[in-house]
Structure formats: structure tokens, C-alpha cells
Length: 428
Ligand SMILES: C[S@@+](CC[C@H](N)C(=O)[O-])C[C@H]1O[C@@H](n2cnc3c(N)ncnc32)[C@H](O)[C@@H]1O
View 1 (cartoon, protein in one colour):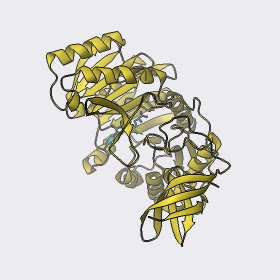
View 2 (cartoon, helix red, strand yellow; view 1 turned 135 degrees about the horizontal axis):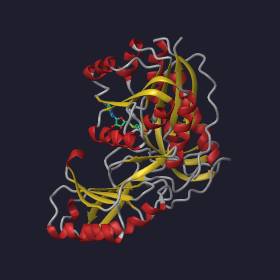
View 3 (tube, protein in one colour; view 1 turned 45 degrees about the vertical axis):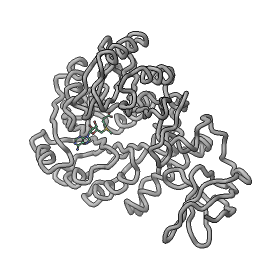
View 4 (cartoon, protein in one colour; view 1 turned 120 degrees about the vertical axis):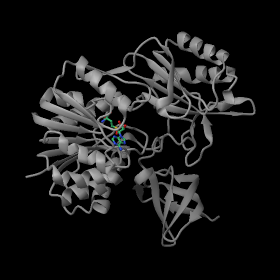
């Protein structure tokens, strides 16, 4: 493949650099704007090419040395080579671009600078370590970029220290198990009250394996250690000597190891505060894709009635418990698949909302957004972790008369290309 010298114009979605070569757009991972690079073309397509960096001939003004020695190989982070200011500029640009290009908004509201959320390192409180035994060596870490190969890691600078401290001991634990070649993944999570581990297994554990896990949990003072063979609902708890929970607005949100939690504690406080600022106070609010109640409980402080809708039964059980513990009698729950017709129809049995807050998974919520024409809340707050699907859904809400009045990107995942945002739509 050709080796050429290029100047990087700017960064695009995913944090790749964009340069031009022979009329083609060339996308280069790990590039920074203004970099002068010698690259190898790795693929050519009809109107673009991909390339990898051979040498940095001259660094652009926003390049900074990455903290992690495995940056560029490990698929976890994409932006460590950029200053924080440049990372945030890129994230804002991604939001602006998806509103213009995907949402086709002619006059979107002004998008503010991405606010800084501290800490910028050691923030990640949940992770899935990939595990593989290769020639008697246990590899534990994350997938390589665009590959299922495992980058064997000692430390990860975006992980919370409590989880970093477990990496080596977990590797040693797997090494002692009779089924060590049948342990593809370890999930780790840390709340404000303790640490949890899920050992994923393909074959059943022996009694000895179980004893080793019990011993590990005791030695490392884990709140819980669970074993999962297959689906999430087949979780078997080996140790429960504490609870997993985090605190928010003075309330306690308990969670199970399989429940969704926002992975950046400080970032989450910021995100919820922004959403609550937009929510104000009122009569009835719906929290759609509610999880364990991360937005439901704060809404319950501000609204006379809150309906939480979620597909995962375990998360809803947790939400009910969390809500009762906080002393709320005015929260109601509905288990529904919000991607299905039946799930959307079930919404019409809920009291009419003044406010709808939705926080869908990455794929967004096309059908739900189309359905919002029937409900037309006074205000809809859309919390998104994917600006592209948000751009698409925002256009649907716009066609239904929702006026997009604010979009605020929040930097929940420093050093990665992930972008979170809070958007507000109003109906007259
Ligand atoms: C991005 S998380 C948000 C959770 C919660 N709002 C929070 O901040 O912690 C998305 C949630 O949507 C739920 N979910 C995913 N697909 C769903 C579906 N088809 N119907 C209903 N809920 C779904 C997941 O279980 C998860 O709890």
C-alpha cells in the first residue's frame, strides 16, 4: 500500500483525523489537527481512504503525549493524544455536525462549549475486562481497536483506582481456575458502598473454583461476587457481603451488577443537574428508559407524579426499592419494551405528562419519538449518548412540532470519542 505525506485538516466523528489525497478524504486514527504525517494507506473505497500513521513529521498545536503506554493499540480510548480543550472542541463539533447533517436543522439553538467535568482521569466506575488464555498466559484487558484481540493491561488510567487495583489479582484468580480457558470476561463495578465482580463462564465451575472465588471476594472485601453463564438473568450470586449503591442528591440508588449505571459518577451528577434544571417543577413527568431511577428519583423531588418506564425487570425492581427508601409514594413503574408497538401503546394508560425525559440506549428511539406526536408534552428532555442517532430522532421530534430549544454536550467520557448530551424540546 502507498506511503504518503499528509497534512491533517481536522478531526471528525470517532476522533479520526481527516486529510486529502488525490481527491479522496483520508481518515487517520490517532491524528491531530495540523499534524504533518507520513502515513500508509490501509484501504481505499469509492470516495474515501483509510490510513495509519508511520511517523509524525511535525505535530499539530493540539497534540499532547498520551498518558497510557498502550494508547493507539487499546480500543478503549481514542483521544488521549489531544489536549482536553481540543477533545471538548471536537465533541462540540460532532454535535453541531449531526444536527446539521443528520437532523437537517437550518437554525439549531447555539451549542455551548462542552463543560469540563472533573476528574479527567480515573473516573470510570464500571468496566468489562476481556480475558483469554494464550499458551498458559492469562491476558486481561480490553479489545484492540477494531479487533477481538486482547490488549493485556496492567493499569488503565481512566479506570477508578479501586478497579485498577483488582486487575492483577483478577488475572491471578483466573489463572487458578480449572475452567480458566472458559472465562471470557470479568465485569467490575464500584459504587459508593463497595465493589462488585461478575465472572462470566462458558462451562460450570468446579467446587474448588467456587471456593477460590469465595476466598478472592473475602480477601478483596468485595460487596458481591456473581457468576454469569449465558444471559444476564442467569446470574448466580456467590458472595453478598455488602451492597452496591451510589448517592445522588442525598438519595441512595442501589443497583445490581447487571443493571445499567452511568459510568462516570461526577459526570452523572453534572448530567442529572442539567436535566433537572431543564425539568423545573410540575405535575406529571415520565422517565422513559429509567434504569434504576437515576432521573426518576430526582424528578420525584420536583414533580407531583412520576412514571418510570423500563424494559429490564431487575432494574425496575431496584427502582421501586430505591424510590420507597427515598420516601416517595408518587412514583409508578411500567415494564415495557419501548421499541415495540405494545410497549408504546401501554404509555397511553399512564397519566398525561407535562414533562417527558427519555434516555435511550445508543440506538436511539425512532418509534418512541414518532409516538410522541400523540402525547405532546409541554417539554421533552432527551438525554443521548450518541449524537448521530440523536440527530435523526431530533428531526422526527421537530417534524412533530417540538421546538429544539437547547442542546448541551457533557464530557462524560474524557479521552474517548463518546459524546453525551442533554437536549430540550418544547411544544406550544
Ligand atoms: C442509557 S440507559 C439509561 C438508564 C437510566 N436513565 C440512567 O441514567 O441510569 C438505557 C436504559 O434503557 C433500557 N432499555 C434498553 N432497551 C430498552 C427497550 N427496548 N425498552 C425499554 N427499556 C430499554 C436499558 O435497560 C437501560 O436501563
